[in-house]
Image 1: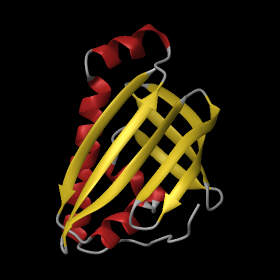
Image 2: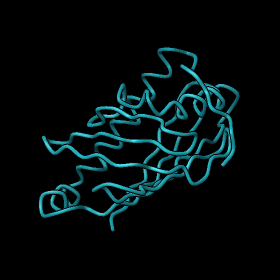
Image 3: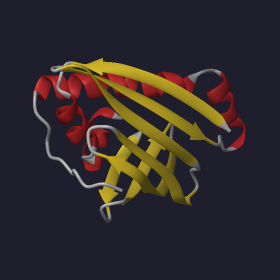
Image 4: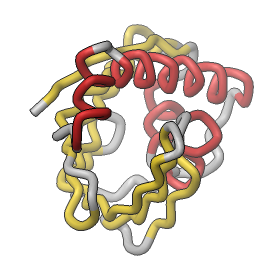
Length: 149
């Protein structure tokens, strides 16, 4: 199993950062390799990804969601096996630390090599930077789901 931890500070209040993160269908805007996400229920999402020409589909279940604090998930079907957690920590009234922790199982020789070469860590770093640009350029979220799981 592989693991990555990365964070970014965004210049928006914690509520805005958290609300935007709950809009899973918007992830393709800032997550490289994510083609589309369909929110099937409050806690189940269907993902279609394409990384270096390898397309995968899987379902992810939200296992914990606490407004303005954290969202945790794990895959429940499909070829991809991963689990993760993103936390939101207010630095001050207008700045939030968004920290992502993810565990996954690389499939095959190519994914194992990419993992060892730091590809996934660089992709996560880039995704968080693009999230920062996305939310700061908007200055407001595209929606919100504030339920607890």
